[in-house]
Length: 158
Image 1 (spheres, one colour):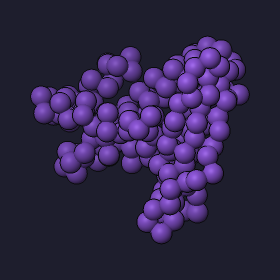
Image 2 (tube, one colour):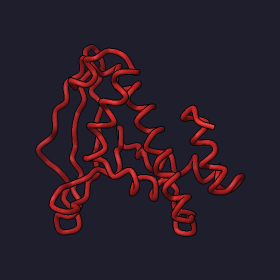
Image 3 (cartoon, one colour):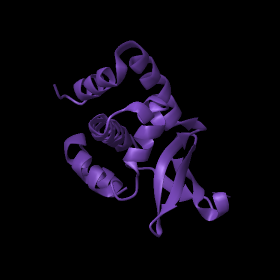
C-alpha cells in the first residue's frame, strides 16, 4: 500500500513493477491467458507476449490501484491448499472506506522454495479467464502476431 501513497500513476507504475515481478509469474499468467495457442507459439512470440502482457497488467492495475490508496487489506486465515501444498489460494478482503469490501483470491504455486502468484480473482472473476476470452477472439481473427501487435499498441508501442 505504501507504493500507492505516491499518488500518481507515473511514479506508482515503476514501483509497482519492481514490487510485483518477484511475486507474480507473468510467463505462466500469459500462457494461461493465451490458452492452447501458447503451445504452438515460437519462443520469440512467447517472450514478446509475456513482455507485453506484463506491461499491460502493470500499467492497467497500478493506475487502478491508486483508487485503493486508503484501503485496508485483511488476509484471511483460511487459505485453500491444493496439490499437496504446491498450490495455495490466498484469500483477502480489501476494505475501501464507505464501500462494500472486495474479496480477492491470489492463486499461487510453489517454485524454488517460494510461492508465486499466477492468477488473481476479484469477487470470483478470474483475471486470467477474462483475458483468455479477449485473447482468444484476437488470436482467432489475427493470430498470435496480431495479439502481440494489439498488446504493443495498448501499451503505447508500435
